[in-house]
Length: 229
Image (cartoon, rainbow, N blue to C red; front, side, top):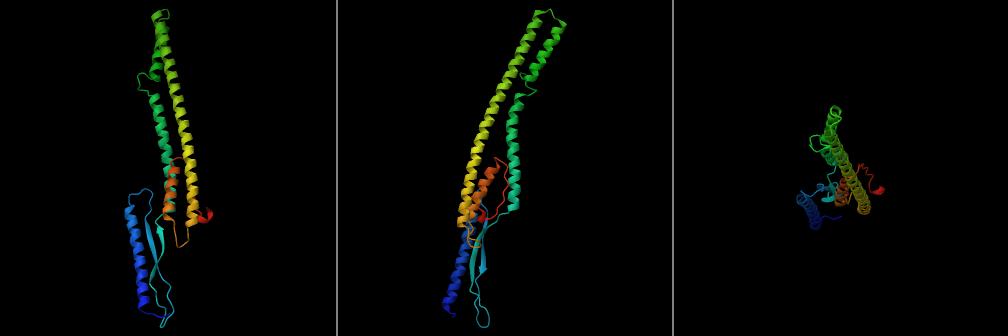
């Protein structure tokens, strides 16, 4: 192969393309600095194969090998595990908070107060069994306790129905997310070219969907590569 001005110019063009790809990727990183789920990317540069020449191999410049994304599978797996646990505890807290308010011991009109009033009425009746006012007070206290228990039972049934509706909605959402993840896996497999083309945006979107899924159910991810999709 002969060397000349064209060879040098081609080498310069290749270097400009490589630099342009790096600048483009850097600009993309800056533009998406606040984008949820975006992973920072970088261009991997490599030297072009040299050619045999006197007195030895002569380089032909630089080229872009691939665009990679900074992603740690171990950290992501740990995050998903902790995120699932946090979401579970958060859901339990929200539901149990309503139950706590329902059986609040400090509530003057609550179950504890109604039980205390009924036992107090029983105690007075044991001391004044022939007093009609004491008997009526006991009946009133028993009626109040019954109404309080019934109200609590109705509230718990309503809460149970709301939880069942939420579970059904979560199941539907989880199924939809899994369908979307499966579709993204197919897109990743079809566009992936090892060492040349990494579908980074699709992988970011898939990870975002997996995180949404982890907020609903426990998730464990094993990525065996595009060939397994």
